[in-house]
Image 1 (cartoon, rainbow, N blue to C red):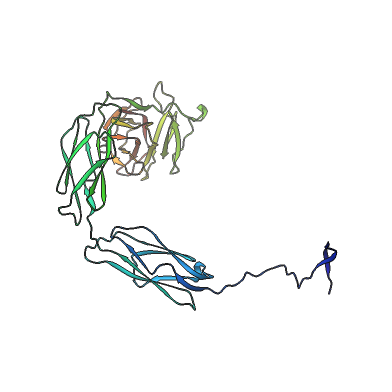
Image 2: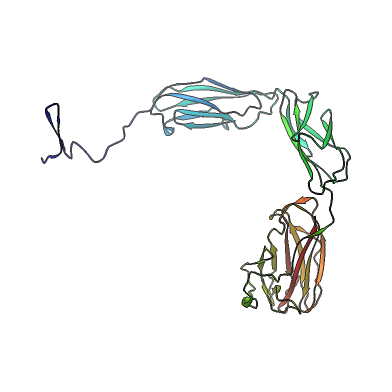
Amino acid sequence: MKNIFIATAIVSGIVLGAACTKEASPAQYEKENITPVLEGVSADNLFWECDGLETYRIDLDGEGLVPEAVTAVTDAENSAFYIDVNGDIILVSPKSVNTDPQTDIEETLSISVTGSETFSVSLKQSRMNKPMLLAVEPGELKWSHDQTDTRSVTVSGLNIDGVKLSVTSDTENSGFSWSVSGLTVDVTPESTNTSPDAARSETLTISAEGGNSISFKVSQARMPSEPEILYSTSFENTDKPEANLPSYTFSDVPVTYTCDGKQWTMTYADVTSQYVWTSKTSHILARVSNGSDQQAVICSDNLLSDVNTITTFSVTLARRNNNEGWCRVEYSTDGTTWSAAGDDFQAMLSGSAAEEYEFSGPTGDIDTFMIRVTYYFKETPSAHSFLNFEGVKIMGY
């Protein structure tokens, strides 16, 4: 056997030689395999109030208690508790409030490892034995700036008949007053809102004595200002180089276009200098091909830069050639849900002018406003058909 000496040292006059062999110093070491043993648990019962959802911890005593070695299950087919096994720690919490006024939730949690004693922990969440507010209807009250009438919400729940209710606001100097009668809360704005800059918006919280709380929102719109232009474009200030303006595409692959700082996405449409009228350099041109059932869609990104109230908005359109094309104008305040601005219509027929079509805006203050114009045919067109989209204007304050 070949020995390799790797170190020699003299300690207190004694010469020490260190040698290793392949047999003596293997290159790999095996992890110690500890047989799991469960010797005890830190609790034998856990209790929650009917509305309690806190998490309790059970500590396990033993050896080798890794998560895969420990089993913790209750005797319920569908447990009302979350059981989270983390080796020698188990976390337990109710999945929801117990709204049953008659029956406690009771289960037995069995904790074990193979070959060791099984330990049991009683889990109990009491029946709904206290006042519990479950809902408030409606969940929001809104007034215009000059409305000061009294409006009401009603609460529902369990064990709340004859229970005293109280109301608080999240605003120190509230702009609203309220009174409580049984399960009804009446709310009144203190005055008209004469501020053109800010709406009054608060959260009121109803609390049941000895029970829980539930909240709802109240708001009073700001005083309108004279409408002004919030955004407008004529699709002439483009991010595309001048030389590329005549180059356009009409396909189902969306193309984007930035004008006056806002992005537009177009399908079967593009910005082009083709077919512009005198004094214009470009516009958006939509097309529906001969014999197709395609729809041209032109959709904006958010056209607002602040929180605003929109009074009206308009799109300027014209059917360029003699066709039976229809226009649908929609708007969205969240980018997901679209609302029709009015009935579908046929834009004016002209190759040298366009008409401004005006619509009412959504009510209230918003921070997102998007416009979508769809050009389509109810019957298959017999020739290529075009729609000039010349501009957009949004009025408000």
